[in-house]
Image (cartoon, rainbow, N blue to C red; front, side):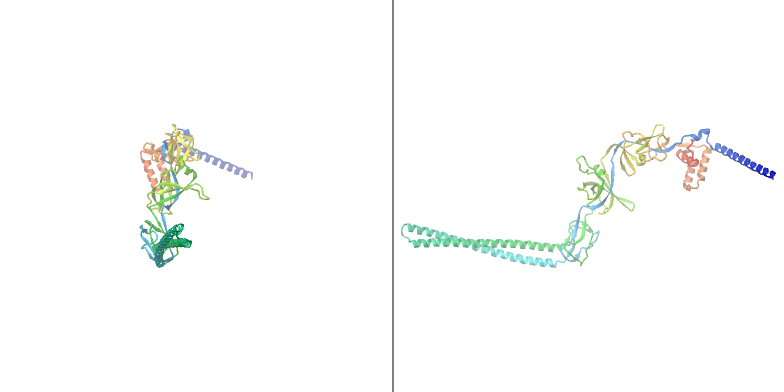
Amino acid sequence: MRFLTRSLIALAFAALSLAALGYAGYSMMSAIQSRSEAPEGGPGADARERVFTVRALTVTSGEVTPELAAFGEVRTRRSLELRAPMSGTVLELAPGFEDGAEVAEGQLLFRIDPSDAEATLAFAQSDLVRAEAELREAIRALDLAAEDVEASQAQLDLRARALERMQGLAERGIATEAGLEEAELALSSARQALVSRRQAEAQAEARRDQAQTALDRQRISLADAERQLADTRVHAGFSGTLADVAIAEGGIVTSQEKLARIIDPESLEVSVSVSTAQYLRLIDESGRLISSDAEVALEVAGFEITSPGRVLRASATVAEGQTGRRIFVELLAPRGFRPGDFVTVRLNEPVLQDVALLPATAVNPAGNVLVINSEDRLEAMPVTVLRRQGDDVIVEAKELAGREIVREIGPNLGAGIRVRPQRETATGELLEDAAEMVTLDPERRAKLIAQVESNTRMPEQVRARMIAQLSEEAVPAAMIERLESGSSGRPQRGG
């Protein structure tokens, strides 16, 4: 029994010894393989600093016109509502009287049954003839009353002279008292008759005035009847396009019922809502709105219809429950636009001096840009962002002018990191001398080609293009860096 126990212990120790020898051999083989794959330069080669390739951009200072983008609705500046001037039956419609139809100024649009209007006009004409006859009669009566007054005045003058003669005779003792009294009574009667004739003349004048007033009223009634008859035929006030048509031939309409609308398609404007801060940038020192240029754009099925515009005016009040301001932009070339379109309006703000237009990716959330110094290392520099428009930003360029910055800041970039800049223009085009080329030795070239061929996740076309580039004498350094970084997972090593 003791012999069996000792034999089992010996077998266990032998197994452990074999396992330790196997692990030692595996470690040695791994070390030899890693050393053979490592580039020349000794064991410290893995500790070389990693260099990132970045897209560089040289900042230029100058004048930039900021662009304010807002949304608005197109509406017409000139429209005319067509309403039924009177009740009746629609007897006639113009050919093509429908939504979207073009009409010319003065064109007959529709006609309402004129029977009632014609009857009213006939009555007005008859009343006018009667009023004219009444006026003529009143004038003749006034003339007769005037003649009566003249006759009464002559009678009075005669009685007055007779009284004077009688008084003269009475002073000489020839006339009697009875004759003198008779002459005085005759004069008094003549004076009373003259007053009566004048009252009759005044009444004749009043009658003439009333007849004249009645005639004027009848003329007004006649003009109103003629207008009502003319209103049965509705014409276009100006040339334009019909909209909101709600009328049919033979239908009965009521007075002031809305039947259609004429819109002038050449006179359009856009109502735009902007914030108060944006509005303050569009006014001058006196508080008046600047008449700046604008561009109005409408996206339709992947295409964009544009029209130049001009800022006209701003709203006088702020609607209840609203904020900001509402401005109105005139469309100078409204072809293709219609009232009700929801459009984008781009307004030109006053020009800014000593600023730079940079991609938005060049500024990190902290408001810094990464400047590339003379040693190709990154330095963080704070900037003042004045405007953000689309994918670009406008920043103050007093301290940044002429410096080289990173165009796109990634999560791996920060101050102190060494980079290999690919210099680009402001439009993102790669400069001719910006691409660095590296000549590979045969062993390194074969290793990279094998790496590309073994990558099954890469599309066949991309794989073929990369193999062709790796087969050339000079290979872009950026490609080598991407391949070696992706294959080994370690920092880039020099070529």
